[in-house]
Image 1 (cartoon, rainbow, N blue to C red):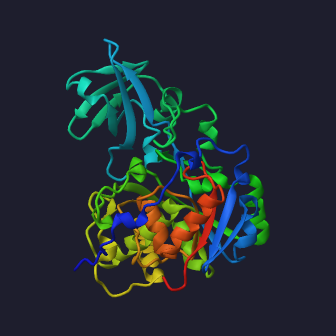
Image 2 (tube, rainbow, N blue to C red):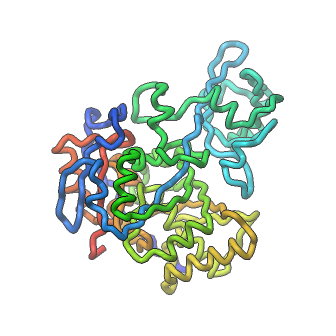
Image 3 (cartoon, rainbow, N blue to C red):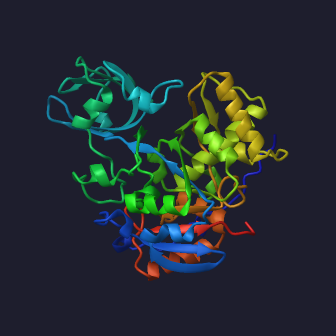
Length: 401
């Protein structure tokens, strides 16, 4: 099939972001963040505490329930040279990351390696009961072994550090272990938080229940690639790093039954639910699934094809899961959402304010077009806090997009 990816200059998504606007710490209360509401060109300022007042009663909020792992592991060679590992993802064919976190005795991870040039092939590093050795130095695959009865998750909790985004120019503090997780974080595997969900408090969730707003959960393990700036002049040329998705039959049945607006909470939830749609398309087009894992390439959504309904796509995935007697389905996605992309499960989004020239900001433009500039100009002029620990927005999709 022919590929019809639009050519979009990344310079169109640049804006001046003063360092003083980047939130370095969270507010004392999650729901005290400001909320900027955009609907058909109109803007309104409020508090996140009042989010429920702006959502239609028949809305379905789609949350990402991933949980950030303490992915930074500091090591020392015997000669005192410092090495730091940044865990990216475990090497496995089809197992969810949260399942692999319960491994005992041995596990292999792809990592970013700080000071890699000082760690030679054949060198074995140790920390406590753990040993670290190269499996494939070129691919940054590292074998980690231990001889205790602990799971890898338990050991990592003892020695690892929560990885804050690079634009937070400070070290991790004890409070980040709580505040850089959502209230509903459950599935271990992310190396960055789904930050749009950090604002949700028990009080906000209770308000949503009283209003009759529905909730559902999926899993996208956010990878380090979420922070990579777009370096190519053309957005479509940006390499999207794969991120693991986990879907359940319950999620799919909820989406099929829902008749009102779909509101993903965060760009990761939107990318995940859109990837679910393309998983169904993949199955309907009878494309191969290697080693039990469907990998959705960046270009797949932009191939020329006849339209496939949301219902047909979701039913194809549900049929596959049930026919294979699976409790969940694992996939990986490289999806890139940009202006011109046909949204399937998004009538609005709850999201923070994103970096200039980032794929996340490009995604926002797919919902509200060039109005993203007015939204961001307004936020900057009204002292909104930006990025991961910053304030929030509720953006309803423009009708003419």
